[in-house]
Image 1 (tube, rainbow, N blue to C red):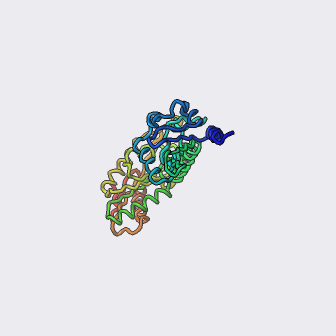
Image 2: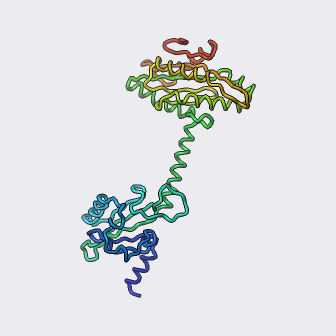
Image 3: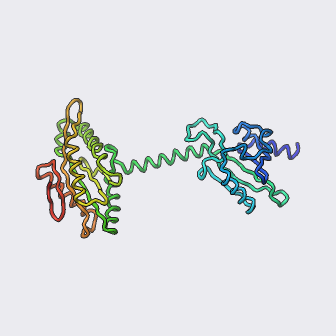
Length: 316
């Protein structure tokens, strides 16, 4: 068996596409892998422009790539992470992916058997499995990261992540002397609700309260569950007057929202405390303490009301 026959046999057994072009970007060689995946025999494509056979090729990018390989006489690589696919070859994997086409790693090799580059060889590696499982891994990691930030019951931020957000917003407000306000509120008589109707009813109320509040907030606000039946909202670029308006809308929306649990109508109310960043405030914990003091005053003053902390506590 001649060396040429050996080379032809090996090329046709490779699980990699081998495409050889001349310097005018006409196809010179096309192996069995490409015949199968492109559904075109070598005799049908040899001699034709690569842009005629693969009309989807990004022509300017492709020409620049080949020119660089020829001028530098150096191989070049394009991974599926940079460009999902270069050639529209359908993948044959029995898996569900976001693309009908094979994810590809493509290597561009200059061919210069006599010292002068006359051809470019492009190796097309099927990276569909790697792409698919890498995407699954990234999604899993993103889901885990999200789970570490979100309260499992109410789907708002958990306390740890919420405090991290407050720390950053507090530092930003101090640095640029921007407005920043904090709302803290607590469900009234929540223990009594649990005692009468059970903890599943209490969970339902917490979920519904979170759902009621979300539409009242901006995308830049940070809504979190501070603990138990207590929630907190960070309002960037908002002074205490604006925060008081938001607090009152929240209090009234919850009071007007009649829920149902096992055929029984359930009403809830909240006591709300509002604090504001002031230049003399040195720690974000002090801002929490001020809002919490206002909240305590709202509860001790009869509940279902909003109180503000500005030098001293004032109730609306």
